[in-house]
Image (cartoon, rainbow, N blue to C red; front, side, top):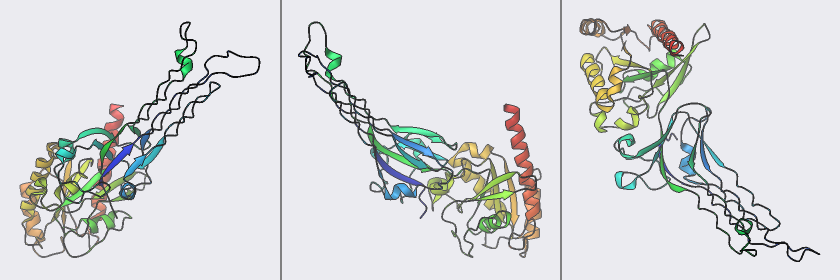
Length: 361
């Protein structure tokens, strides 16, 4: 099961109560107050883990709880603070504060959100974007411990019986959303050959079949180059016209494109599905721009796939005339033609990206 969006309920631990106690020892008839403070409640912490690739653990455990701190004790003994409850999430997870009034399409608590809705970045309050390995975030803070009666002694109050209760830990509903992180994203219509292409350029083994929407969740592959450099490529499930309005599974797919540094638009250049490849390209570009205007300014290139089919060469010439300044890679992923040319272009992009990062540093 692949879960990339889910609602959870988190409750941090309560603080322990302070203690009312007086020292009672032999030969010390008036020992005075010695009540200790309560311990702090545990926090709810999200920690990114590179070994985790989706949010399925929260499907089976939607209620996140941390233990409460111990109460204070006599002889100035403080209560033990509770350990933080740490929950691992994949790199690329975004946490939102859930607003029920803004999300009528959400499922019951603990169930993956199967009904597509508007992008949560517009409606829900974003708390954190966990985009780095080992990054942590305190989702709910534990309550502070209460004070014992030793804090209330004075020259006028020599027998204090006051204490404070521990504070309640923070609690609330949250929405976790995964956005796949990859250097390049394969974007295209269903059955354009994206999964086949990913299996040829990397060691990934996505499902390949001759029908649309074979891929139902993003799959990330790694390309190894001879100079020991690596580049990650994500196979984004097929988009269709109206995806920005959530037609098909639009928003479920589009959010995974946002983090890709390079967009590789894969076209069925032969028009084997009865569509015009140039029109497909224009529609894809439009859908990306309508979903997130920043995507239209992202670096992109074209892969003209299925060159082994009739009519592909004619459509390729028309595409080159329409986009003379754009990088176009003619290939047939099924026949292993054009694979090395695509990998070389991806390698050049990776080198340019690394130089840009080094220049900024």
